[in-house]
Length: 368
Image (cartoon, rainbow, N blue to C red; front, side, top):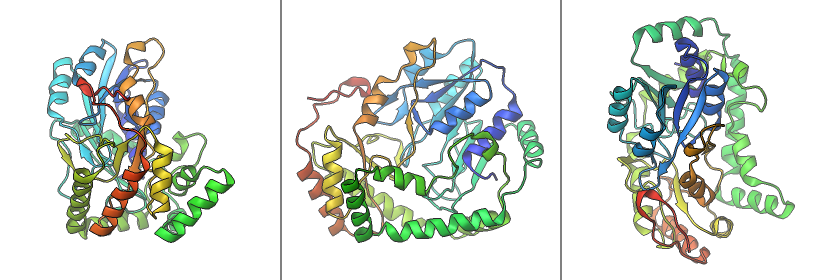
């Protein structure tokens, strides 16, 4: 149990004490703080470009990027989909690497304990996550000696003050009230008229950590109210809601207009924590959806593209960059009835002004 996935990942790297200058191959799209944590431990994050069809790191690219300095592979499961970890487990075993998986966006219930081939599986229960406790994380660590060192380090960290957790609860309650359809549309319109970044407001409202130096904020144990909330959420996990969310996402995937591409359509499994589409006219699509009362956004997830480090230009993730430049998230909430989903499809269909050309092999994106 940790305060967050980022806290747990920092804890793991501190316990392992990998050699300075070592490289970690990471999914080309991930949370930027994961890269910052890698760098804070004297390591280098090397991105593995993605296969857009599965949202998985490309195995052939990962194989080419392995060097004698490579220490580990960190694969992120994106937007509610799951990457097939078996090929990466084989690659890690072949080269003597550690294999870590970030399941923050892909929790499927209390029975989900990660891929058996992974040395580390990380699950988040932050503000917008499945089974949210407004914070907290669970980590499964295969190496028991590393786990013992993590426990020892963790016990030296201060406890999160209870008042901080209560403040987070109150802030999220206010956020949930203003994101109801009518209020959300009005707020989005006001920001658009004033020329302000509405997505930045949304992300800031649910951000777990303040801007500034990250590592000191990570070194905090979860408070008792946070632990109690997470324990309760796990005991009462709503399987039916997850199934309904998955069904809503699959219906949307089957009915999304042809000029929009849904990345991850060939993922191993999909629960649609978020529903991304690719379009050449992202701004028009968002405006059309928001006018119809739906919270389409570009910044609904905090993930971004990882840049190639100095000296490793061959790792530049060109496909991931093109994908992220055209990404818009549509709501696929289980609470939305089929009629609302149909209106969303209609709004999305009317917004796009041109169609993407067929995608080339290997997940390469090409647009007219």
